[in-house]
Amino acid sequence: MAEANQPLLQVEGLSARYGKVPALASTSLTLAPGGIVTVIGANGAGKSTLLNALMGALPVNGSESGSVRLGGIEVSGWDVARRVGAGMSLVPEKRELFASMSVKDNLLLGGFRRYCAREAGWRDEMDRVYALFPRLAERRHQQAGTLSGGERQMLAVGRALMARPRVLLLDEPSLGLAPLVVREIFRIVAGLRDTGVGILLVEQNARAALQVADHGYVLEAGEVVLSGPARELEGNPRVIESYLGLGAGKRV
Ligand SMILES: Nc1ncnc2c1ncn2[C@@H]1O[C@H](COP(=O)(O)OP(=O)(O)OP(=O)(O)O)[C@@H](O)[C@H]1O
Image (cartoon, rainbow, N blue to C red; front, side, top):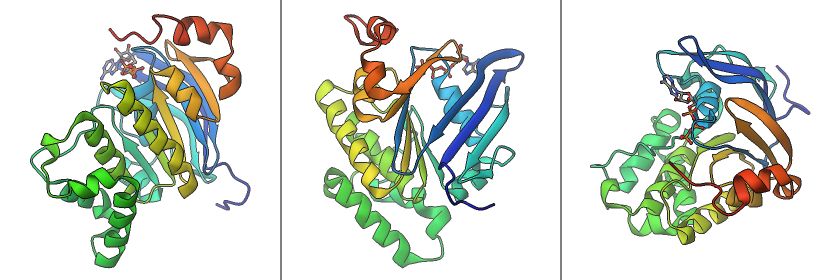
């Protein structure tokens, strides 16, 4: 049970399949407190599958095996709610906001499990989120469905932070955003490390992800084919050719 000297998140031999079709093969990775680890890969490489398997949130035809330890505690048999309660939060690729609800109410829902009985707690947390995302503070009464793409991504991240996670799992935060907005989102992601949260970032935008991360993994067809310090991966010829060169990162 003890946490001393344990990595924040340690994943060993995590595999996932949909029905009989394998989607993730024996993946292992480690995340330290305040660390940013990225998993880069093309469409269909298995990035969302990895995050959903980590959360215990695969769709009904999915199943996973392997070890997931949070602060040294095995959580792999746990359901999603218990993993969220233990400090894991996922920002899904589709953001999944409540479009007809206000920014503030979306944030409140993110903190519901933690703060339902303690009003003071969520107010402090919401103030922290508004300090990180002043644009959300300005728009607190605006309907989430009317936000810009970048603001929606900020709200999705802010909502996840309301649960005060120890590990934040980000599924393609740059998806569909203009380059300037991507830069802003990644600047915010980099700043989050000061809060002590560990971040696992899956991305097709390898360039931006490797610039912000300490360590990276390259996922191809459900398998980690390369890993190393992010700075080294940025200089790796295979990464340059497939993910950083001209035309890399094209979306289908
Ligand atoms: N519910 C599902 N049922 C069957 N197969 C699935 C299901 N979800 C994903 N897959 C398949 O699993 C593989 C990995 O998909 P996944 O969504 O994890 O990839 P990804 O790297 O996140 O891709 P993208 O960048 O396009 O979101 C793909 O071949 C996909 O078709």
